[in-house]
Length: 108
Image (cartoon, rainbow, N blue to C red; front, side):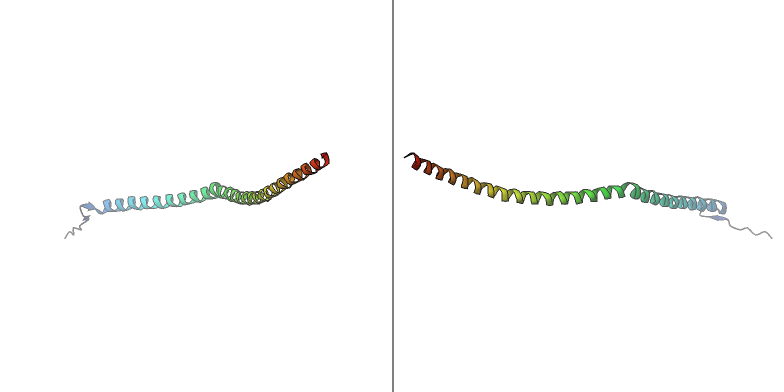
């Protein structure tokens, strides 16, 4: 008696199914490998390229904050100096007026 074993599933033989599963497994393994390599590449990119840029931006930010603080201090000093200048200008005009009065008395 001969036993006939059905080796066809969905129209494909057992050998075809093994080949299909092998190809799918290789594609999945390749994608996994690519994923790991791309992750490593992105980490290297971040470490070698982006970290120095972040550091420089941080330094720039600190310098800008210091510059803004210096500008504010300078502006306040200028305002105080401007007020002193106005006060001195008024004093000068008052002195000129007094000297003019004294000169007129002296010439009379």
